[in-house]
Amino acid sequence: MLINKTKGKVWTGRVKIADTFFKRFRGLMLTPNVNYALVFILPSETRLNASIHMFFMLQSIDVIFLDSSREVVDLKRARPWRFYVPKGGAKYIIETPVGVIDYLNAEIGDEIDWEVEEERSAIPSPVEALNKIGIKNSNGTISLAEPKPKLKGE
Image (cartoon, rainbow, N blue to C red; front, top):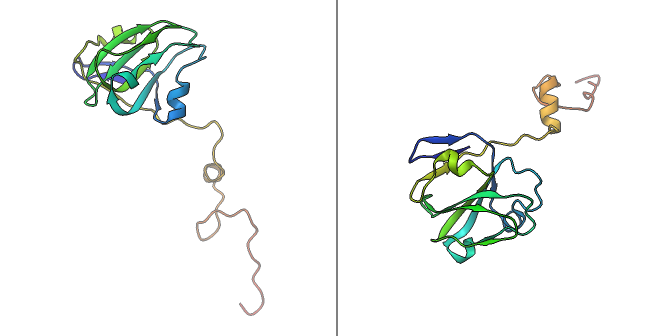
């Protein structure tokens, strides 16, 4: 979810984080239907390194550039096959579906925050699966092995 703290507006869509070089490199390129926001966390606040390209994008997006205090320094409706440089230095870039800037009523100087929903895997881990079906032995631990038989004299 994206929150315009200045105006009290909330966009309840899904938010993902691009905090590594490869996640930032991939961005939303070749994404057929942008239906979530992607927050880019840059190593430092800068103007030129916060520039974005729209090469290999299949649709337009809204882009919000934020400084290190998460205040808006620039807003763009970015179209495919273009290049954009923010008006001021940015530490965070939020790429969203078209219309989110209008929905948040975002303007330069507004404080924008986000909450990332924890993504759940479609395939549970083995421990999660065993916990759900309640396979436990007498001492409370999970074991797939048969219990060790007791020998005479034990």
